[in-house]
Length: 158
Image 1 (spheres, rainbow, N blue to C red):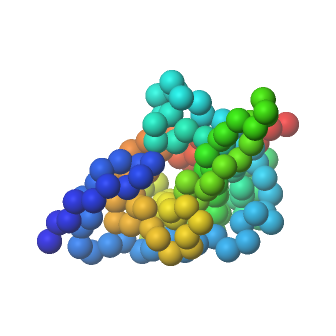
Image 2: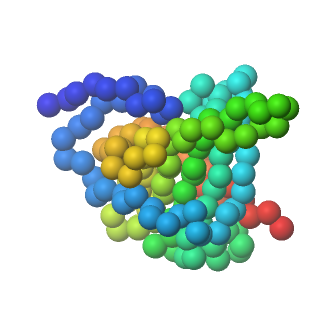
């Protein structure tokens, strides 16, 4: 049975039976290495879906690959922490969390998405999933052109 639903920040998708392996919530990711931050403003092509303050974190396995420029080994986890951006007296500050996006590398589990499992956890929830079985369209469709960089967008800053 197909059920249509809307995923805030991502897109309108169709959930399918036979979900792929699930990506777990990345407990303790804020203690991992911070790779970079960026802000997407209104007017950017991804502004409606991903506007706000982005923080990228990498676990220990992913960190070495960031520093060398990839590829990432199985067990690598990258977290994309997206928060609303708001003005506070001329300073851009974090607002509420929109989503915690997760990429987990396991070449045997996720053969159709470059070896990466994708998930988004809505707001501050550790259980309310935004992607589920739709990783190929909700996430990997955008990441696929990044094949030369093991499907990742962020780079280690020297």
